[in-house]
Amino acid sequence: MSHKIKILTIIGARPQIIKASAISRAIRNNYKDTIQEIIVHTGQHYDANMSAVFFGELEIPQPDYNLNVGSGKHGLQTAEMIKGIEEIIINEKPDCMVLYGDTNSTLAGAIAASKLHCKIVHIEAGLRSYNKAMPEEINRILCDHCATMLFSPTLTGYQNLVKEGFAIDQLPPFTPDYPKIYYCGDIMFDNTLYFSKIANEKSEILKKNKLIDNKYALATIHRDNNTDDSQRLTSIFKAILNISISKNIDFVIPLHPRTAKILKDNLLNNIYQQLMENKHIKIIEPVSFLDMIALEQNAVLVVTDSGGVQKEAYFLQKPCIILRPQTEWIELTEHGSSIITDADEARIIDAANLLLSKSFSNFPPIFGNGKAAEFICSEIAANIK
Ligand code: UD1
Ligand code: UDP
Image (tube, rainbow, N blue to C red; front, top):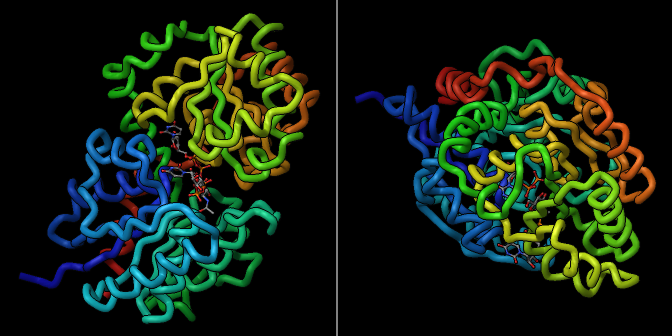
């Protein structure tokens, strides 16, 4: 039997677990004789509804290793991950490491792999907010600059890499010094296409929360600059209350544990009480991906500071308010169906008024053809020795 390419996949935070399902599915369907996947879960996310829930429903193989690193200060958390991943690389001797996105788990994998000369495949490469106060911006830049194969989901991401000096015409063999960059579409578009039909059939989340199609908005909030700053967090929730009342719509808010832990203490001016007393504001536990897709598909509006959720709004043709000072997915705002408001109450309300008064029908396929994961596997199969 010929030698299979052994890839070491690092996951840790919720969005990475979801993303990894696209590559695992492509391997299972078409590359099982070529690629062997070893999955390492760093344990960055560990609550059942932030981690375990995704494995069964998204058909992701159980991790071969779990480092159980858990929460902590960035330095300590990342260091513990590096230590654990280093040992696994030494024992497993993978042909390459596959890293997703921009979390501390991504950075830890990049550092451990590059020190041991293990080639890095970075999926979701090239994205930039041009705001280095975001921990994710540092993580993604460092990972990109020690990777050997860089797969960008958007043309903007690809062009960002070119601006940073990556060659467009690199010939194999690819190495960290001669890396190859690709614009290949978004594996999360693959996932949304694949799971949206199943979500509509299986999910009971609307019924469970007494939500009516197109009569509710969906909100998620978890970025540290929003959760940890009382003024910003209060401003966001005041806007949500205002929109719910003035537009007569419910808000469903599957709340990240980071935000849930801090909400009561960080909301000013009686806003917490107002939220608790308002039956149109439904703050719920984090939901499974199928439930999330069902919520996104039937919402009239999405309000979020999540990177993934703002894109899924576009995939599912929903208007979106982005609660951040800038976005690395600038195609969304150029299209017009997404508006950046930062955490500014008045801007959030104005954006809701504008977006709910319009209808958007033309959503060009800028995130690929739903086969990005297949393409990535074919390039790994052809180029990693
Ligand atoms: C991390 C990523 C962020 C990503 C997000 C996805 C970094 C620097 N940030 O942010 O890019 O958008 O994941 O959700 O890697 N907690 C729990 N249970 C859990 C996980 C977290 O209670 O299962 C709480 C803990 O109090 C923890 C806090 O959430 O301290 C933050 O978790 P952490 O993983 O450090 O960062 P996120 O904000 O989740
Ligand atoms: N998501 C989910 N359940 C939730 C909230 C989000 O399954 O309760 C999914 C969402 O659909 C998207 C991903 O998690 O695919 C985004 O993760 P998150 O917002 O935590 O991180 P980010 O994308 O900002 O890094």
